[in-house]
Amino acid sequence: MSPVRRSAEEIRSQADELAACFEGFDPSEAHEVPVAEYLLERAMRARTLCEREVARAVIVARTGGATWRRIGEVLGVDERDAREAYGLDEDQRAEVGATRTPEL
Image 1 (cartoon, rainbow, N blue to C red):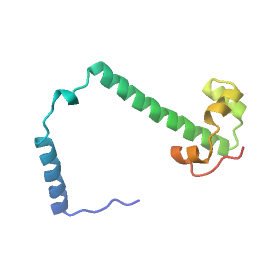
Image 2 (cartoon, rainbow, N blue to C red):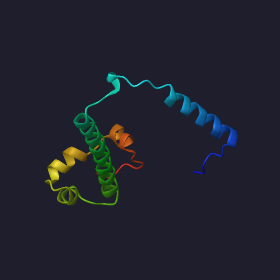
Image 3 (tube, one colour):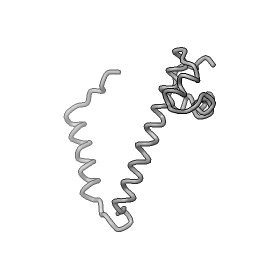
Image 4 (cartoon, one colour):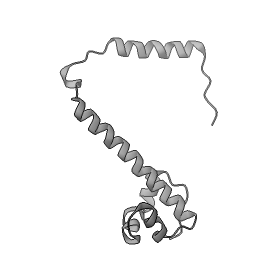
């Protein structure tokens, strides 16, 4: 995918809009989050991203012919647990960005 070319005027206009948003921002106590909660939220976002990456990798491995037994070995779980955790249905495959259905 090639980048969208924008004129200098469009870039300046967007920069002005962003500057106005930041200049008009009035932080209040409602926006403040304790550091411990922020770190927990950040860790959960990272965990979610990692789980999606593992799910995608399992789909690629299955598409490439890997058995559930081997996938379980790599994940450190038994075959049944791997299949239960990552044997995705069509909607779930779409959610993790699978482009091809693995042969089961």
